[in-house]
Length: 132
Image 1 (cartoon, rainbow, N blue to C red):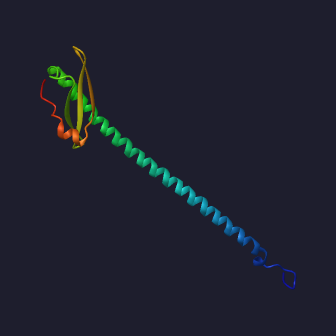
Image 2: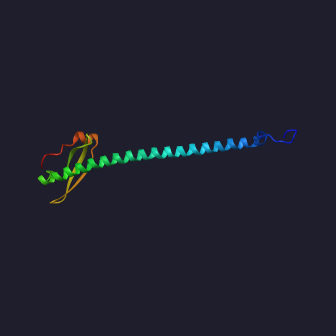
Image 3: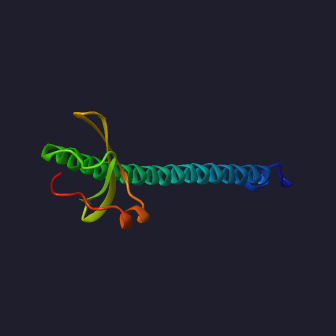
C-alpha cells in the first residue's frame, strides 16, 4: 500500500508467483512422465512386432520343410526306421536347415517331425534324397 491507500499490482501477487512456478513444475513433470510412458510403450510394441515377425518367418521355413519331407513319402518309404535327414529351404533369401525324422508307427503309417537343425546336425546329417 502506498501513502494514499492504493495497492500496487506487484505487491499483491508476490505470494502467487511461487504457486505459478509450482504449477509449471508439476505440469512439466506430468508431461515428461507421459512422454516417457509413450516412448516405452512404442519401444515395447516395436520389439514385440519384430519378435513375432521372426517367429512367423521361422514357422514358414519349418512348415515348408515339413511339406517337402512329407511329399518325399510319395516316392516310397525310407530305408531305415527311424530315418533322419537334412531339409534345406529358402526363407526370404536365406537358407534354413531343418532336421526331418521319419518313424514308422505301422506298415503304411509314418510320423514326420521337422525341427530346426543345429550346426552339428547340419554337418552330420545327409541331405534330403530325391526319392526313397
